Length: 24
Image (cartoon, rainbow, N blue to C red; front, side, top):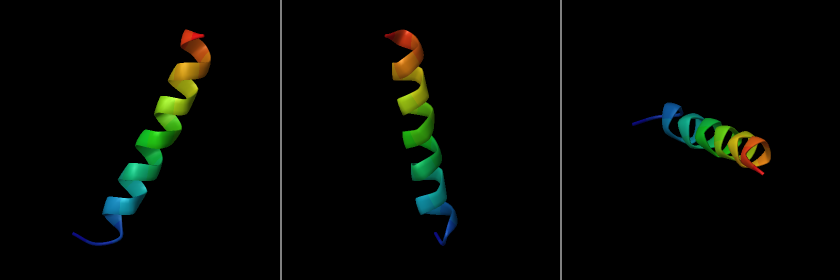
């Protein structure tokens, strides 16, 4: 568990944001 954790979270957040934009 290192710097990869926050990166994954940020990536997920970004993906979710884009998905929401496309969904709406």
